[in-house]
Image (cartoon, rainbow, N blue to C red; front, side, top):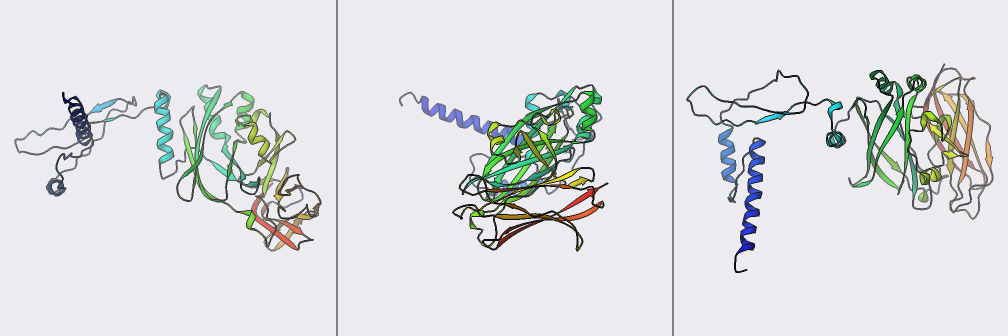
Length: 392
C-alpha cells in the first residue's frame, strides 16, 4: 500500500493487455483505439479509410506445402503518400502426413464447427430409441462408411488405418447434452482389404437421453489419408408415457445381418460393456446390424425388430404383430401374425417382436414396409411404415 507495488502491477498488466490487442489489430488488418470512449472517432477513421483504396490479390508461386509462415511485404516505388494496410504474411498449406498431434486436433475442431458439411468421406447414419424406464431412453447410433473409401490406404503401403470419430448431441436450445470421441483401428490385411471393398465399415455407440428434440453432428476422419466426412441430422425422442390412444412402440429396426460380437470385420467398434447390456440389438452374443440405407439383396433375409410397452397395465397383455410389404397399392407379402403373451420382467412390461423374412420370393424393386401391432384386449393398435429396396 505504501510502495505502490500493487498499482504498478495493475498498470503493467493493463499495458500488456493493450499491447496484445494492438498487435492483434495490426496482424488482422484492423485498428486499435485505446482510452477513447467516443466511438465516433473510430467510425470517422473507418469512413476515411474506405473512401479511396485498392485491393491487391496475391497468388503464391511456391507450391511447397510445408506449413511454414511466409512473409509478405508491399512497398510503393513512388513518392506519393499512401497508407498501406495489409497482412504481414500467411501460413502455407500442410500435408496431412506432416501434421503433428496439435495440427490433427485443430483440424477436427475446425471441421466440427464448420456450418457446411465435408464430403470427402461418405457417411450414413441411423438413430433409434428404446425405452429403458419412465424417464430415460437408450439411443443406439449406427454409422456406416463405405469400405472402398478406406481400403485405398492399403495401396499406400499401410497395413491398417485409424479412424477418428467425434460427435456431439445438442438439445433444442443449442446446449450440448453429450458428446463422443473415439478412435478405432481397422486392420487391412489382404483378406480384409478385399472384404472392405465390398462391405461398409460399421461403428455404433449408444447414449441415454430424455424425451425431446436433438441435433446430432458426427465427424469421421481417416487418420491415414486425412480425409474427413461430416454428418448432421435432427431427431426426436417421443415421450411414450403420454401415448394412450395407441400402443407405444420403439423404433423399428430393419436388418440383413446378425454378427458375432467378436467378428473380425466389425471389431473396430469400441463397445462398452454397459452399452452392450442396455442395447436391445445385442442378444445371445450377437448384434443386429441395422440397415441404414434399407437396401436388401434377394439372397439374404430381412430381420425386423421392435419393442412394445404396456407400462400402465397391471400385467402383460397379449399383443399381436405382423409385417406387410406393399408395392404401390398392392400387398406383395405379409408374415403370419405373431402373438406374444408375456414380456420382459420390468416396470414397462416390454414386449419384444422379432421377424425373419426371406426375400428370395420377392421381385426386385421398391417396397413400403409396414409393421402392425394390435392389442385385442385394449382395442389399440400401432403402425410403422418405411420404404425399402430389394435388389437382385
